[in-house]
Image (spheres, rainbow, N blue to C red):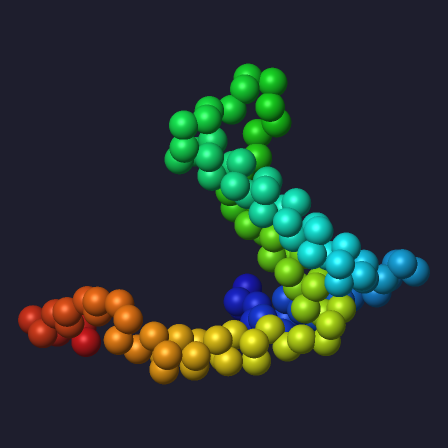
Length: 116
């Protein structure tokens, strides 16, 4: 099975949403959905890595599932506004590579590693 590109993901979501008369929610509603999903992700991270263990009555969810939910809603948001996520990613990476080029301490290259 080949890996899906960002364009593939955007197309998958669009094909799914396109089967419904309602189509995409408004940008405002999708922003609220992203906020909701981020809260659910934060809750799972807190259960696994924080000081708040799950109650025995709480449904078992995973961080992976919540990240997937976030990704789905983010893709819906981008699609609804006709944003190419690959292009958006490329723009932000260029910004980080130029603006923040010397902001962080880079790891030293291992010159003894023959696999480079």
